[in-house]
Length: 328
Image 1: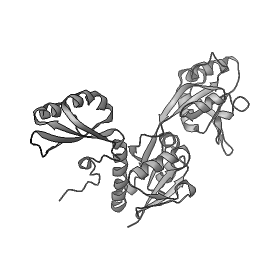
Image 2 (image 1 turned 90 degrees about the vertical axis):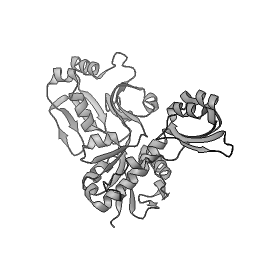
Image 3 (image 1 turned 60 degrees about the horizontal axis):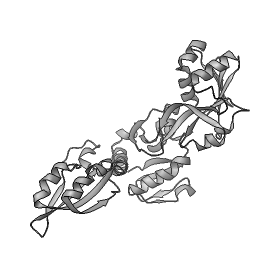
Image 4 (image 1 turned 180 degrees about the horizontal axis):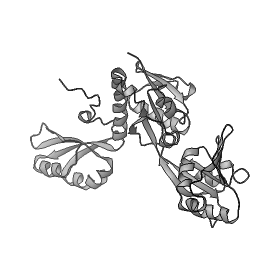
């Protein structure tokens, strides 16, 4: 069987990606010290790539499966299948300007000010497509410049006809560009600390992003590869779901059992087992983490011996028969 080529990202996505894969049951050797770490599944071949490259390589079939940021997926416009929101590495793509511009608090105000002053608005960003789409959708931009495309400048390409608003491709350290090389930036932030250190303030959110699992569409119709891809998906979904659950065990008197069951949410139905004392039962179930404090008073009043576990994974396998094969 041909191996499934799984691309994992460098940069800020790397550490949480390795932790998520390890929580899913994969043992990875090499980590970030090599571009080709090994994994304990012989049918998976790992490669470390920049997250902005991963959607393109997967779209072109050079990789079968990968983890990247939703921001880079939308920026590259890659034609891939999104399999799962992995729900980590939450960031925002924001428009930011110098903090001293106290009267500028939106893109509309920024565009109006530079137009009124007859100045060229220079914006530095790694996200040329997302920036172009966002700016052109602004009603003030449309009023001032119609359908004209902002001028885009890179080392190998210059396009667009509106020289009043110019997008410069950044190769990193975007927050350091103002004021000499840019008037504003469009960049990702997690906490906003880096903007603060560079005397910048976010004035609008372009989009929110998180890590996603994506696949090549042709690989998903290759029977052998599809099975392995869905193995990976099943395990990673188990991690995502597991973070939202708690596994609880309680002992309850027979007279209180039904009251407890009526109040206790469960993944399906709680597991109930009699204890050696016929007047007592053991109940174990999986509940939503965010409901634990809600049901704690009920448990305290009706149950004894509460034990709480954080599950590594929760795998509702009856919902995850992605392969489409009928059971025997």
